Image: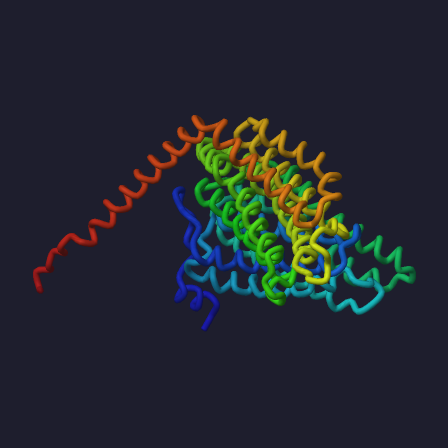
Length: 443
């Protein structure tokens, strides 16, 4: 059977409607992306050095750009309808392979090049799947096809640079020079991708459903926060240790401060930004979607990975029965924990500034307090350092609940009214299912 016949049997690609929400296949796809976040955390945790952190950021930036492109494709076509899931399954397999190859992508560049080659080929397949699907979605829109061509140099350049980074360094003699060339090529990919996103502009693009776009990014951030909890639990070997009161206390503190970081975005900032994107139209909406979500979510995701690494180091020390409970934090755990939270909150403040044109002074004060607390936490026992950052984060949340009570209530009321109206509309539409069907004359 021809490809056309198979595609016809599976069904056509379904465009995204203005009020569309995220479908289940998109969440399924996101789990593979978050597995990649987990791999980045695990590979970096093996030996935390400046070079390992640089490599983690380079991989995260390249991976995040693929997710941004993925979210752009999802604004035009339903990923769980018609023939699209078949094509996206190929992309999922390539993404999973890319994630599995990451631990070997930055090892001795003069050694076996299988890991870097698999990473480059897998990434090329991911980008090809997105390109073909988006090209199909905009086949009847000349403006969007022309805009798509502006990204052709980025797609070709990114995949070629990753291929060169896999093939050229093993041919060089010096370890240092080979590593510098490889890292420089990966950095070139990052610069090319994010610069292209700015230079290409907003003309020709569109965000059909602001609800879909915001929900898409909110879900990936929630899943990333959940991955940080899993990373701490698995990496710190809590499952392999008998429960002790310090280990239980550390686990509880880890959950509480992660929940506080969730609250920091989803209590007011996230819902208000969603309304702001709904209110924007045409070019300004596309620019806000690009700047606030595609770009400024990256430092928040990076912050999550950093504080997951730090929390893992600290909890591992606390859970170790051979380490005295009063011993100060050893290694990079404490600075990683605090700097990760600072980066997360800093990215969130920039997100707030771009979408709402405001900055909460409580967030500024919290970031300053976290920065000046690093030397203090360095002298505290490991459990004390974890308790300190938990108190600071929970204190910020509690202060905002009290200080911004009037604004929170107004926002909650607006969101509730919107939800009730939406649910009433859905209920009215579904009521037709209970109406008796008219019989045909022949029945």
